[in-house]
Length: 290
Image 1: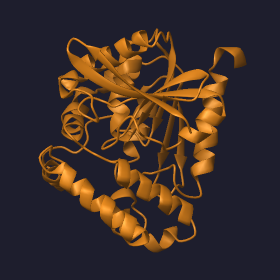
Image 2 (image 1 turned 90 degrees about the vertical axis):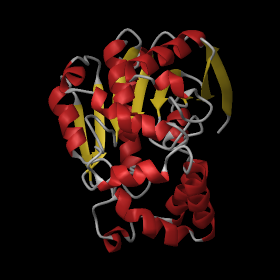
Image 3 (image 1 turned 90 degrees about the horizontal axis):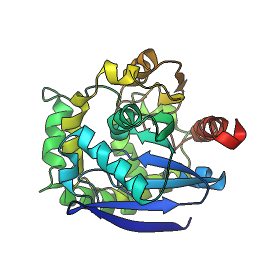
């Protein structure tokens, strides 16, 4: 899959981005620990005539952390990127910890947003300071330690891919590991290793943790574009309650709760169904197909 990488400078701040494919533009707000090199679900969408525009969100990749001073300010910068690229309207896909960004962008810039898709997305306050996971994340994924953390995970994943998938499994799924045998292929394990190879937290993940409290039910209720919500019922990383909350508050939204093995709905036997849902939804809300 061919990809163009660029860097947009504004107000002495930098935003890294990539563009893959040609056709109807889709603005992707990637999940935590990711960046403009994200790949999950891209080949299917590019193959169906969509152009994937992926900025590294605030503090990730080479994007300045100052852009993320507030979630609202970050969304202002993403809108400036679209203006820079001469793009008038986009489908928005928001993934995991990128959920709050997608929600606020769709609310704040309805004239730029053709549709909103939430995939395994955070839609309300997540990982508060009282949570053990929050405390561990602050230590492991702090900007001073995250390079070492991801270096070790990447190295171990390349050498012992199945072992590392098993070790990390419980952070993604509420299912017993034995129940996923047969649902995860060697190709899925390969994609899992590739994910770990491109992951970095930099300043971005701690920004994500601080910004989830900036989203409220009022923001969800203010979204009036067509909205699709996809989530695994067995997601441990982001509880399915987030999907239900979004569905309860976004007017006329469509919710699909999948029997996918866990948070990474792009891997496993349910991945093709999840991809088909997104493609059908985007095509049905693209002008020439309406």
